[in-house]
Length: 128
Image 1 (cartoon, helix red, strand yellow):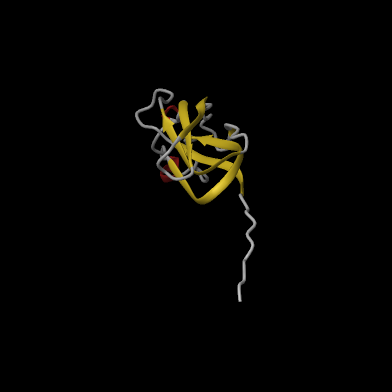
Image 2: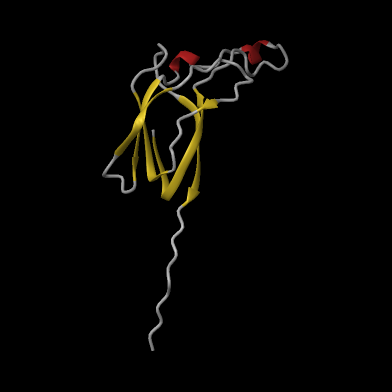
């Protein structure tokens, strides 16, 4: 998964919602159509990942290898603490899955990185 923030940001902590498919998440009225099992399983969630950072999309630096927790398959899932980016500066973040929890595909539900723009001060020079 490649994220392009459009500009360079200082990156901090993160929160990860791994692939989470609650059983009967849409069963609000106990009718047959609302009991349909949703596609995918928590086993499809990413387990071990490598995260790389770049400012130009060509030169990459490995932030590290991380193990993400398996989602519980619950409609009350609130995500888990993700990797800390330790104020690294990057425009691009690349997440590469190495394996999953035994499923037939790979997925994440959501990945949030707390970040702040990097500001620079410039001075306009006026000549006459």
